[in-house]
Length: 99
Image 1 (cartoon, one colour):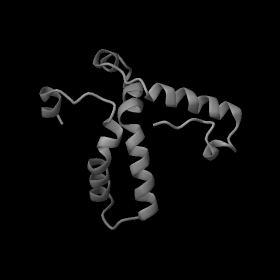
Image 2 (cartoon, rainbow, N blue to C red):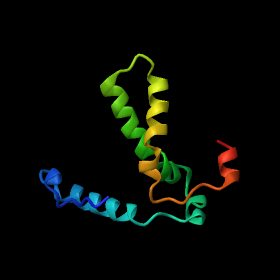
Image 3 (cartoon, helix red, strand yellow):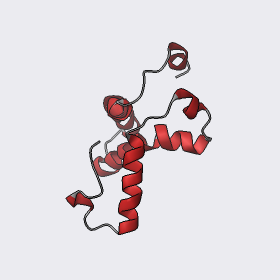
Image 4 (cartoon, rainbow, N blue to C red):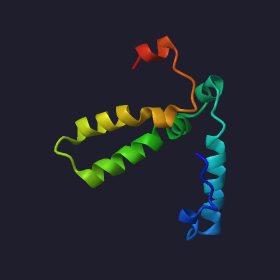
């Protein structure tokens, strides 16, 4: 993601919000190691790994209102997971078995 809070889409945001966006965008450029992830609190782990795609998926479900929202959500997550894992290393086989 080469976005910056200086982009036109962020122009109307308050300075403090743009600073937070800059910080978060910079953090996304440097993925955490396995050791760092394992030592995170539960909240931090979920915020780092799952919440971004879930928020996007839930927004799409709310907008589209499909007849089977659970199935739609599952399909969305599977279809878009690579977008959220692009900067992460592939999971080890032992991690895949627990899913």
